[in-house]
Amino acid sequence: DSGVTQTPKHLITATGQRVTLRCSPRSGDLSVYWYQQSLDQGLQFLIHYYNGEERAKGNILERFSAQQFPDLHSELNLSSLELGDSALYFCASSVESGERTEAFFGQGTRLTVV
Amino acid sequence: DQQVKQNSPSLSVQEGRISILNCDYTNSMFDYFLWYKKYPAEGPTFLISISSIKDKNEDGRFTVFLNKSAKHLSLHIVPSQPGDSAVYFCAASGGAGNTPLVFGKGTRLSVIA
Image 1: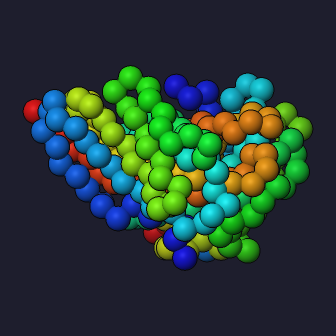
Image 2: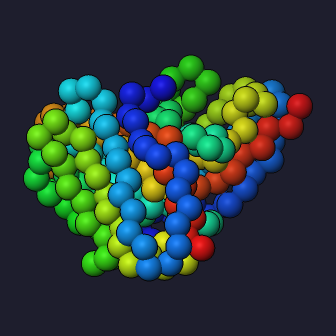
Image 3: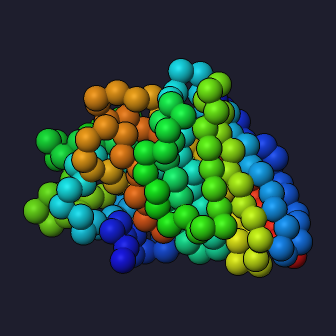
């Protein structure tokens, strides 16, 4: 158990709909990262939040948005869903420090758009 | 443009032998490298890391080697066990602070008993 909790584990929805994925980081971790893993692809970085503020953006579509709340949990909102958005979405957290440190991943949310 | 490349999608190794997984990177700013292991229906779990100031890091059966001039790293697993069968991702980061990890596409390792 990594200590990172993602809900829901599975989500099936129709094209055009909107969904919200939730992530609770490990206790004490201030950084939250969202990644997308599509079929046969590696983990694609979407967005990074640190202590409530957006730190970096990767290949995140304009239809997608995220935020990190004062209690440090994060939500990833996906709207106007398309079939191609079907993927595994992972959240990871890490402690902020001057030293390099690994990120800890949740179990992921499998999104299926039909 | 893939900054981290794992050119072997899969690898099969006999139990007890050495598994060698390879990773190449293109970004000279990367200075921290990690390997993650992923089982089906689970999130990636951290395995081992190496800083660019080192060329080798060892943790039990797992050793990571870094060749900065070739922009290449490898993960050695000795001896390989059936429980090592998983997808292995190479990841890299660079710059100050908690920069996001850039991942390769992964290599599926099968250890045959």
